[in-house]
Length: 206
Image 1 (tube, rainbow, N blue to C red):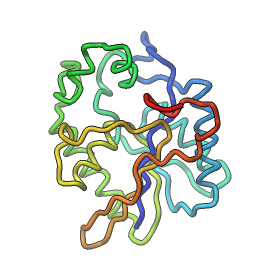
Image 2: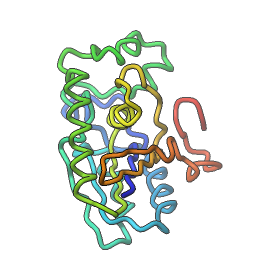
Image 3: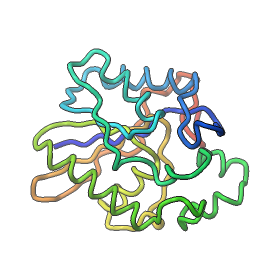
Image 4: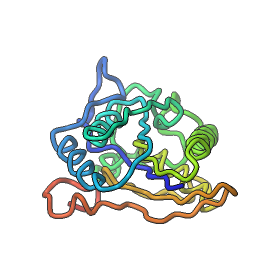
């Protein structure tokens, strides 16, 4: 089967208050999600899953717009810092030189965030369950940067801290998964749909 792990589009920055760490997509993010959906329009998808967080759900919505599918919400693929009080995009922390960036890979950004080891185990198990549920099919899972890091690190036999990398907005990460348990990474950071659009792609590209 083929697994498409997709990072959400660009969210509104530093949303606090009652919205906590669960912001909506920005205007650019909505445009990114539309381009992503157009890029995937020619591909068969047997199921589309999403994290319960708004930025993921709003990214997944255009993908199913012209398909006979509904987005299935999977609470177990929520982001690592879902329980924190404020959403701060990781690329903004790094770009601004915020000292909290250096703590991300230690799992100590916020005392209310989930332990990295527990988080990685949760993600590997949850994504593994989705793989097992769709033999010989292609599914899209719209999620988050640290979720993608955790699962791809497991495929590579590494820890999430030693394998940390930056997934671009609406980037696609394809994994071929055999019934035998073998996992192969096919592509990483696939963002052809954003090239030439003028929209932000990620921290390092536009």
